[in-house]
Image 1 (cartoon, rainbow, N blue to C red):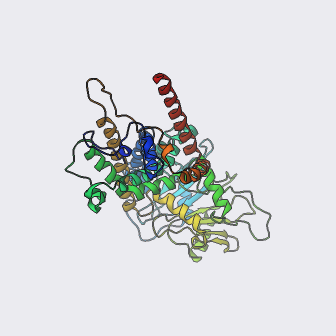
Image 2: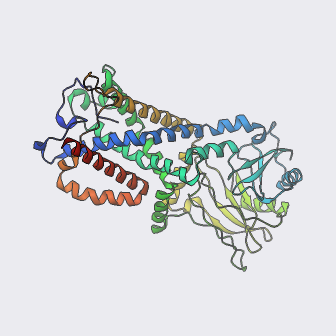
Image 3: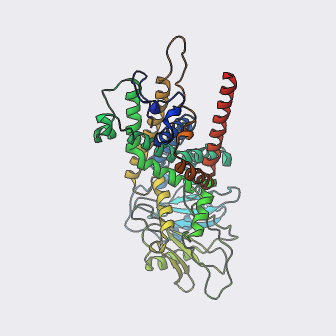
Length: 487
């Protein structure tokens, strides 16, 4: 959001986006406002392209449930819903007959009556991906197979990578982290500037804050749409910024350290069988994966007995695990089976049990209700960010936010263009940047407290800190060049 207006409108010097600061003004809160104007302008100019791309790719990702059904509906759903599903052993046998390659990694039961059962295979050569065979749970007929990434279809995986890293690998993840790191800064700064205008009856009225002035013309009209839309979307944008940072590369590491400090990670399930040696290490994936799933399945030398899947599922159902679940064989003879709920739609269900199929009993249980609050908020935030928490409503909200952010970005650049000088003797393609030197007008207590606060923020969000330092260096360099030219 911006505070610029038409060139024909007369305003006090501290609201002008260009020109030097008035030495007579001294230190005041107007200096803070002038600094916010400059920060908001430069963040809008240089970071807005990242935000636009993130919004556009995120919009595409929100459509994946419908696109998946369009492309893979014959595999994901059954033609006719039967009376009762066949045993998992029969469904696994049918899947293995059609696809004997690799080894059994897990089986995911249907989430809805019309959904197919997913038999997941670990196949050499697929890396961190799996081969998923889709089986009609009522007839045990194989409907097809797909190469998946933690349950995601090829299309969803492709769009996921596009949103996260533009298919550029680890280097490409910097783009999304730049967007997430700066989004909250742009939103918060814009809110302060828009709500703190305080000039005129309309600026102080509720209607003037919530709605654009449709009688305005030129840059003032554009600014109204830019700011009012940003105000309406502020909470959603701040939510996307915060949740996106939790699984980013550098800020995500800092976030993980914070969870370690407060013991805020989700409890791990103890899969050791009673009286047996410790099992092989099972890495805890936490929130590192974009899809929020657990660690990679361990490659197994031979398939587990198909009937044991039914035995593990039966014990888990008796323990209270309803809905769709993932049944995973033990990693080694000293480990138990794992049955985990996978219901992402509110109210979520994420209970997990370790099952000893030989004894038909649960050996360990982690309940969603017992997760620490930080772990719950992280998990729910990830699901909400991905559009899976409230079903179609979650998708609609995310799509509206994405479209709104693209419009805000467009209006911001339009304002920059509308403010360009048009006189024959001083024309330019864009408007001038806000005045330099605003920090000299900031009250000393704010300056003294602000510097270490910004430094701490730069440590917590390294990409934000580095890019902000880059802005400062570029600004100092531009000022030095201008001063030398003037001399």
